[in-house]
Image: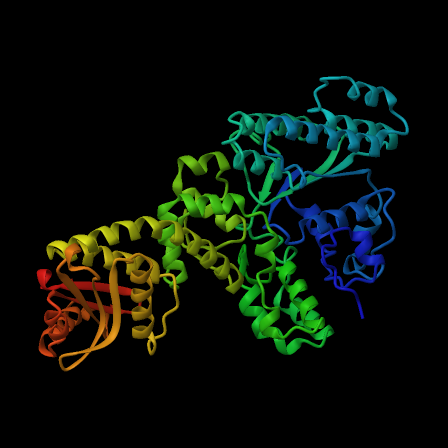
Length: 556
């Protein structure tokens, strides 16, 4: 049985190590046929970009190994004859440049570029190496210099592969609050580095850059008119990054797990690249199969593997700091249609200035699907259960933070109600609290009343140490759903009686809430509390799905 390629992004290791390999080798031809001397390919993290780039390197490289014998690309006889092991290739990845300040990031960049120079030109160009060993030498020409040396060595133009070029820029954007000049310095460095290597470079055959975002368009690529961008919105290379339905089914079948396909589809399928729907997250599929063949049940193996290993800092920042996004996530979690503006070429810099830019960010990073509906409008939706679980987890943390402030206002309003008999403010705050919090839960029709009642009781008990909170207490001719009143009448002489009712439609919730108040009166629920010496304020709570309305006798 073939070994699952967990965390393998080295093509040689993949092929020679007996790993299960989903054949994407036709990419090496198709990417060459794409327009643009410089091709920028953006896809979400861990969707196979690095492995594919390493495959491209091994195919074209003069010193590449014979690793393609069993792969589809070898059927393209003419193309193979003209291109297989025919070019000097430089491959560099920026994926580990994630420092929290510019000083450390600059050191890491220079170290990475110096290692690249050693790897490719140590044998025959000590002059350039000695230049870069001097203190304070600028490294912005390093990529240009290495292409020149290789061209002169082999007499052939160079293929330049730059993997995850945007990672340093994303880190600079994320940590610019710690180092105000970090982002500007990083953008300037990467702009100079890439411009030198990619613009009018006479030694360049073609170049490929990969990343998640089409970032900083106004500066990094401003001087480059030879860059063609192939984003998740483009109708090109849709199936080369991520797995297709057929590929996942064959993989499951190989490991005798084909009966799991529906569960895997719900959790890890659903991505839309270009005009192709139904792309699977490869990272999560591989980890799921690993856990299943290790003995876990389907239910236990269905976990958010990709979310738990991806860098979510930039996404979390947007979720926690953007109130408009929080409201729209509520709609997405409720399966409502949402049409938003998306600019496929928006830069990170613009997101802070343009709140709607977050949709481009979320779609590019794989946290939302986006299907174009007009010139600049897209329908967005959550791809699958793995991403849905992420949103619910993050949103719940946001709710917990917001709830602390809402609870404070709610209890203050409750104090006013039991002391002065003014329950209008309390009822409106309670309605807002319930609507905001419960909207993120899946509430079944049959158990909705139980869920609402439990939530009301739990919420009240958390912040009402000076009150009795009771439920289903016999009084008059029935049972009160929820009663709350002061433990000591010196601190208030009013008791709040709450009756919860489910409406049959959204249009009826106000009427049903008032019927709940009438029920409190008609069934004499007040009786017990009036005998205890309290004045009673009836409150009716009606709901339909995730819509809530709270009524008091004051707003009848």
